[in-house]
Every structure is written in C-alpha cells, then in structure tokens.
Amino acid sequence: MTDQNSTMASKPKFIDTSNLRGDIYGGLTAGVVALPLAIAFGVASEAGPSAGLWGAIIVGFLASFFGGTGSQVTGPTGPMVVVFAGVFVGLSGNLPLIFAAVVLAGIIQILFGVLRLGQYIRLVPYPVISGFMSGIGIIIISLQTSSLLGHKPDGNGTIAALKAIPGAIADPNWAALAIGVVTLLTIFLWPAKFGKIIPGALAALIFGTLLSLMLKGAPLLGDIPKGLPDFIIPNINLETFSIVGTAALTLALLGAIDSLLTSLVADNMTKTRHDSNKELIGQGIGNAVAGMFGAIPSAGATMRTVINIRTGGQTKLSGMIHSLFLLAVVLILAPVASKIPLAALAGILIKVGYDIVDVDYFKKAHKGPRWDLILMVIVVLLTVFVDLIQAVAVGVVLASLAFLKRMADDQLGAIKDSKVRSISDEESELMANAQGRVAMFDFGGPLSFSASADLGYQIRQSITDKTSAIVLDFEHVPFLDVTAAKALETVACDAKEAGRTLFISNMQPDLRKVLSGLGVDHCLPDNTEFGSRIEALKAAIAGLSNTKEATA
Image (cartoon, rainbow, N blue to C red; front, side, top):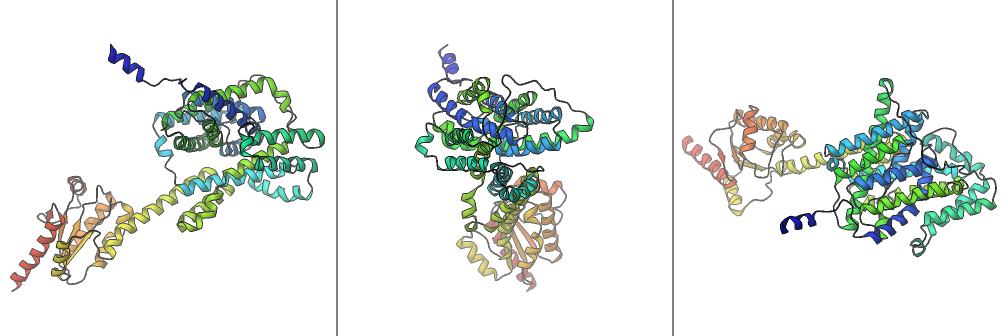
C-alpha cells in the first residue's frame, strides 16, 4: 500500500500549483506585454485587431493546457503573421477559406506530434534559422514603415511595401510621424528598471495614444468588436483544397519550427526539458480551435516566454493566466482600444522586427566559416523576396549538402594524402619495411554516398606501380549505404585486375552482410579478412615475402 501511495505521489500533476504565486505574476506580466503585440499583429495580418487578440487568447490558453513546455507563452508572432497575411491576400479575403487553412494547419500540427516528428523539425542549422528570422524581421520593418509615416502601401507584399516607402517619406502625415517617433524612442529607450513595472511596448502604446489625442489627423485603429467572437464554418472543397492545403502546410511547418525554437530557449532558462511532440499537439489543438472563431494562428512567442520566466512563471498555469488576462481586456476595455493610432502600432512592430533580425550574428558572421555566412545571406534574400518555406527548404538542403561534402572531404583526405589517422609505432615500422609495396587506408566514419563518390578514384591516385597489397581498415565504419558498397566493389575489382591483393580489417558482420546481400563482394578475397589492422598488415607483408621467395 505504501509503495502504491509513493508511486502516485511521485507522478507529475497535470496542473502544477506549487509555483502559483510566480505563475500568476509571470502570466499577468506576459499578458500586459502581449496586449499591444496581439493588437498590432492582428492589424498587420489584415484580419483585424480582434483576430489578433483572440489568437493570443484561444491558442495561448489551449497550447499551454495541452502543450509540453511548462513556461511557454503562445500568441501571434512575426513569422506567423507574415505568412498568414500572405494567405489572407492570396485567398482574396475569403474568410471561410482562410480560416479553413488555419484549422487544417492545426490538424497537421497535431499529426506532427502524434507521428513524433518534433525531434526532426528542430534539426535546422543555425545559419538557416538566423537567415529566416532576419528575413522575417526585414519584412515586418518594410511592411510597417509606410504606416509609421501615416500611409498604406497600394499593393500587398514586401515589394509593394518597399516601393511605397519613398512616396511616404516625400509626403508624410506629420501627426502620424510624430506619434511613430515618440513610440520608437519610448520602446527603444525605456529603462530596464521601469520595464519590471510597465513593459516598454505597453508604455509606448500609452504615450502614442495620449499624443494622438493632442495631434489630430493620424489614422486610428477604429472599433474593436466587444464580446465573444463569431463561429466561422470552414469551407473547403476539391477545387480549393490544393490552395488551402498548401497554405495550411506552410502555417503548420512555420508554427512548429517557431514554437520548438522557443521551447529550446525556455529549456535553457529553466534547466528543464520540454516534450516536443506534446508541444506540437498542444499548438495544433489551439490553432485548430482558433480557426473556427476567426482568430489568427499563433506559435510559441520567445519574448513573451522569456518575460514570463523572468517574472516567476514556470508551469503551464502562467500561459493560461496570460490568456485569461487578455480575455478580460477584450470583454471590458475594447472601446478604449479603438483610439490607438496605427503609427504607434507600427512603431511597436518595427521594434519587434528589429529584435527578430539577428544583428549579433551579422556583426560576427565574417569571423566564422565563409559558407555559413553565404548560406545565411541566401536564406535572407529568399525569405524577403521569394517565399518563407522555400527559403527554409533551400537552406536545409544546401546546409545538408555542405555537411555531406565536409564529411566526404574528411574521410577522403586521409586516402588522398596516403595517411592513416592513428598509426602505432609497430605499424609504422612494418610500413617502412614494406618500402611502398603496401598501401594502407582507413575511413573516418560512416561510408555514405557523399564520401563514396570519389573513393575508387582517390585510392587509385594514392597507390603506385610497385604497390602489390592494399589494406582497408573499417574500424570506424558503423554502416555503409548502397553507393558506398558499389564503390568498394570497384576498389576490390580494380585491385584484382591489377594483380594486387586486398586485405580487410575490422569489418563488422553487418557490413559484410550488406556487401554479400547486394552481391558486390565477388572480387573480395576469401582469406584476407582480419579482426585487427596489425594482423592484416602483417599478413600483407608476409604475402610480399612469399612472393619474393616464389620469384627467386
């Protein structure tokens, strides 16, 4: 009975109230920070401020309740809003279709979690993440610059926004510009000690709004619907499925990457470990429900999560309290929000865009590997001028190819230079006595297609006419693929045709099974395989002596 009780006591609670005071304070603080951002992101998404607020409320609550990162705060984020705005425009403002994409995105995220794909989604190289996020930051700044000057671009997208900036600068709305400048100065210069009481973004919003009461003529936010959102029935059919499905997949992938990256930040700060698959399920449930109520899709928000943790939030209660605070604001203070100037929201979003740009990496990238810098720049350009998901896909592919090339260069380097990585004194002496008639090669790791492409060529280039025996050491080769197996077949058959004896050492049974299963071991000798390299080397040199005696 005692054992059963102790087991039950040790089982973690679904709702942990051990840090109730810290979670309340952290959640309320995160909610205060989230308020201006949710409104601003709602406006930027084209769906309206209430859609931004309800995204933070619905997804924020459900993702915390069902998710796998205790201290994470979920809400509208820059990357998600940029993509969603594109979806909104691409589907011509057709709300049933647009929010069908959001619901489907949530379902796809749930499937990601159920299929346990979370661990793979996180495997994105840092230069790709840096380039992608920096591109998102540049897009946000580009889209909001005209609003800061009191104008709105004629078209949609980054190119249209960039084209509109010169005209907005030439003919600014002076009231809007003054409000925007005050907002930017406030949010950039707000003292950290004051930020513990009133976050900089909220202070900027308050000052900008108060200034708009004195400076007339700046565009305002306008009415925010008070009360609960309307239920939207997603509308999708065979004709629209491909368009909606593509948009949903884009939102799902981006939301998953965005959320799991924030989860990693939370782990580092709290010294805990999140459940990535459970987190994806929680995010998916939140987005699927949000789409049914006309709310914009959301993801784990890094800045709000960091603020939550720093002010005491540790468990999922903090994220839920953040959403409940926003719910109270929507139900009570919606009429007040209608007086907020758009220039103030633009200033807040420009600061968000600046924070997303990886300025620190830009400053130091030239001191790191040249290829990583080139990769980051490519991803930035693709993100800004082409497509976000294509940018990530191209970046991952290029990074993977570069990694495979580095592995291949490392593995083939020793072969090209006729060097063995770690050779004993006894082996060195035996090789010296062989006087170039024995060539010995080892491999630095798994033999994959990247390292196998030039394997036969490099070995042929590394041996001379007087070489009569070749030793291949497989001690560090745990597996090989079909390309590597075919390359070894070429090496073995070349040696056989040239009258050279091939000696094998340290080949694991699984490797031999692959070779025999593919039928590529027909040129390998039957009696020249040894359990250690020194044995293979001694046998090769003994074979040289036998050849000498037979010749004599």
